[in-house]
Amino acid sequence: MKKAILIINANMTAAQTIKHNLTSSNTEIICVTSMYDALQTFINTEFCLIILDAGISAEDDHKLLKAMRKARTTPILILSSQSCHVERLKVFQAGAHAYIGEPYSLEECLAQALSLMELYCDLKPQQEICYTLAFGKDLVIDPATRKVFLKGKDLRLTKKEFDLLFCLASNPGQVFSREQLYDHVWDEYSAHNVDEVVKAQIKLLRQKLSDTGRDYIKNVWGVGYRFQNEPNDE
Image (cartoon, rainbow, N blue to C red):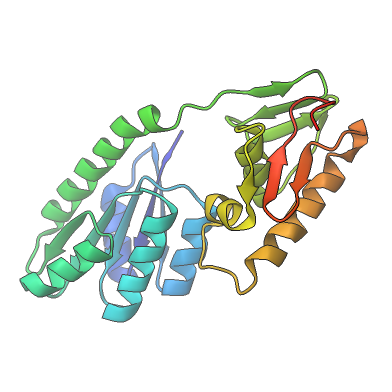
């Protein structure tokens, strides 16, 4: 599997220089120039390294760092035109893992990047060991391929639907509030109405799971939802 790297830099020429030097047969590198594109790309792709040139604006950079750190533990390398200790402290507090201030060489940047990627790849297998979940012959959930089979039929769930089902099914019987499910599944800023967002997604997921005649996701009134493991589990 290729290692995905996200480069965030308002200067596309500088971004392309780093991309060219990091490109190999087992890397996939995406360059973006804005905070919005960075966040959307980060949400939709799993990266093993983020390289952020702190040139968008200090406030936006810190917001982006906090959002990414809250969502995942992806290593974040900051490249900055500043080298003062105050700025270093601010970006580390916001969520950065490494910081290079000017003047710096391309070789130093590449060395830091490769070191962070190596550390992330060494630790990741220990953090994310996923097993196929099977509930009788009707429902099979495979996290490795992100596929769900209902009576042998591929349900073709969306990313949110799969993550929501896997979160509940991995903890059968455990009750999750809507706020807890939102925190587990939605890699983005809080919605204005978390309850409605989660309720709408649960409704769509239940419709896709309805062919067996079983209600896998039970309401726990006044609290949230739980995954029902057994047919007669009331």
